[in-house]
Amino acid sequence: MPKPSKDVLIETLRGLLSEAFALHQKGCTGVRLGRSYGAADGYMRALMDIGLLADKELRAIVVEERTRLLGPATQTLQATDSVADDETLAA
Image (tube, rainbow, N blue to C red; front, side):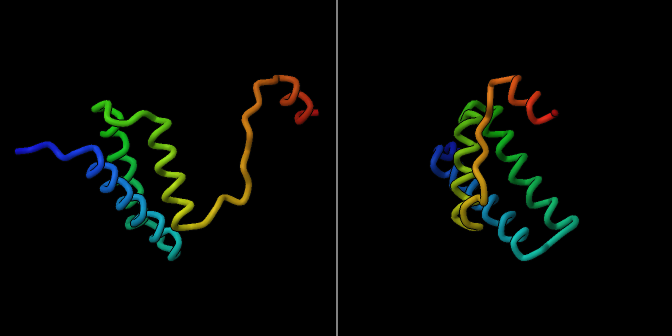
């Protein structure tokens, strides 16, 4: 049995993500939504475990699909390396 190509596996992932985001957008809750997100999550885990995609590549795919289906994020957060920033926020 031939192995599916990387492109086919990524398109399958995009389909799983698309389904999960569509259900979320429609207001679906509970088991159906959880099962859909779980399938996408498990598929991503398998792609990482077999070494096909790295974490950063998977995040990029999720962001692309989310943006395509639900629009851009409302805010972009930047990571900070400074402990001083955290202390300022706590004060």
